[in-house]
Length: 239
Image 1 (tube, helix red, strand yellow):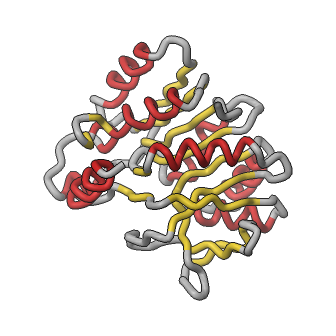
Image 2 (cartoon, one colour; image 1 turned 90 degrees about the horizontal axis):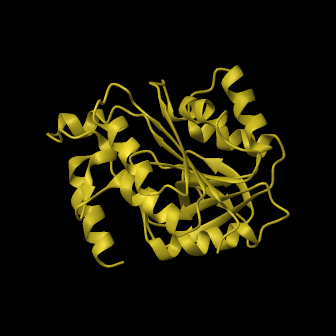
């Protein structure tokens, strides 16, 4: 079992692209094979030994918070912190939930990040063994993002840089981050400087001298559009 026990989910977005394309449910409650995306993440975290889960959700999506409260009751052995707040960006959501994180390593992702469960378990096991690093980022060579963040990785799996253009990079960020508490100092610095995007936070980690490793997933998808739901279900059907 992984030594990573603390997990955080950013689910505070408006899901505007999905709603414009006819999806009436809030994004966290959109189902893949009959399981809401937020339920799937929580179940996977619990299966991998979570004892503390922090979730930030958009209070304007009125169905989400009651759903999370019921979900928390399903797992009484796990501590749940549910934060209802609207934020201007994922990085600001991260800043809000940072106050709820214990002084221990944590794994952070967004609610619409879809991956194979076996890959995630292997990722957490790898993270548990990286005592000399400050964080491990999930990466994938499956590129289906509108604006992917490319990652420059050396032969030992060290992350050298984050890039908006592909260049020589073969992998992109998968939106799953396992970090040690010292990474929060960079977050607060970026917020104080007026930064808004998670990719700028990731660049900030490198600028501050933190040692980051990459772990390769077979495929990671985001559900941003209605058409992505079918893609995600097709992928999960084979995993």
